[in-house]
Image (cartoon, rainbow, N blue to C red; front, side, top):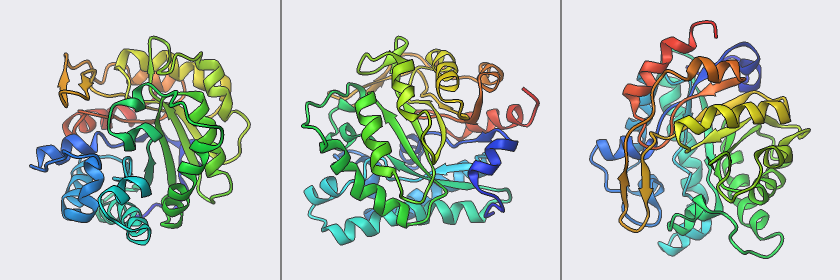
Length: 302
């Protein structure tokens, strides 16, 4: 169902349920995500699979669907032999597929276009390190064309997500300035700091006072890290919080495998809401079943 209010308006009134990890749902559907484009390859090769994954999360109660553009970049598509015009069309398709699933749902569903970090297109795990060693302005020049392409496709919000350091956050916000679509900014964090080792208060400060920032928070981090980081985000920016940690397992980019125990559960949801969360869901390895378990908790008072 297409919402009758903007996402920004909804966040004043409600806490909304995000979806979970798109890649794990695609793998559960039997998709092969090997290769540098990861799930973005399916925008060209198997868009029906992406639509099916979005539908699974909408059925689970998700009120915000995040499109399959996390690893979709002009540079990444070029390595596959895809020209810029077709690459732009594929990015627009990521929004259209999420929108199609959203409009089929029996409840209001908003669409977020994913803008992953620079390191994601390298497919070597560097999005969890940051500090890429690029010259000044390079990150903004990298992100601006894809942000423009995604914004033109008409999402409700741009998810500037899994950001490892404040330098890239600043570049993303600059690139999104004036795009006509609100954004949320979410860092990936570890040990109480950004993945690049920066103080969280200083990192979140790059979003303070910026018009067009609908929410600020964290994603793709260990669940126990999320609450404290969310509290810092709210204190520094005064914006609604966004929180969608991963399962707690850890990705080995060399072995291309997940290790460790699952730590994601619904127990912290009340404390996240008390800390200012207005967008709550899951990231890698969090599937529709776990999203469905969160839904009734978000309908209760915090």
